[in-house]
Length: 288
Image (tube, rainbow, N blue to C red; front, side):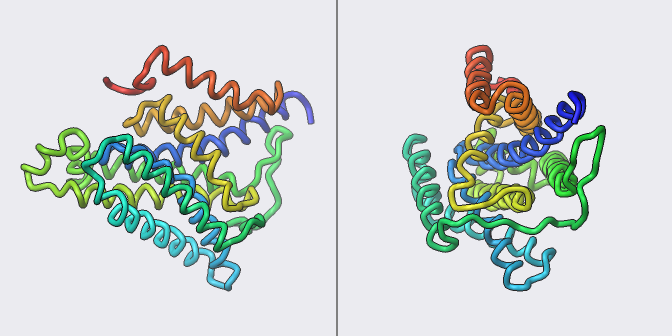
């Protein structure tokens, strides 16, 4: 493999991981836009979606049906958590709410260990076939699914928030909850929907990448961290910014690992975060 092939390979790898970071970041933004809360349990929804899919397909359930069921089950878990644990303390301080989401994350991680054990699991690819060779680089067919799913989800989110009355109502809840309530918009329903939707997108990210990596109960930690970094760089409430930042993070990380060393990948990513926060504390694409 020549130098150009290496660079192309790093780009494909970065695009793949960047798409996952972007999906996680978007799921965080959706919850934040409505409830003004960063959900630190998003990495566990990533795991629950992937491992539920592994379990269902191992039981002989067809992959398309298992795909839908895995997302719906994870959305139900997210909605249940919002109703049972977040809603009762909705009026508390932001610190208490953040601690609650961290506690939820640890509890879900423990539950995942009880259900699936400590061993790793892998899902078979959505499409069987040999990898493609492009400019000497190898491209797994699953990458097309990951990038395609990311693009479709982002388009649907844009259409929802810009073109549907419920999406506009959710934006109103984020910008002025009291004003939205006075106009008859149910802020609680919007928050419930945001949690369910965010959980589903997190699960979708886990399912998409599961054929390319071994999944275990702790596998959601780093995607959650990188998704949060992408969200912070892009702007806490900016979906477009989070997507761009997620893709850039994945590509920067891939080239750092390939050209320099894997030892420096996290250092460079966190350094980039610090530089951005110093220059623009609200993120690169924040309006405020």
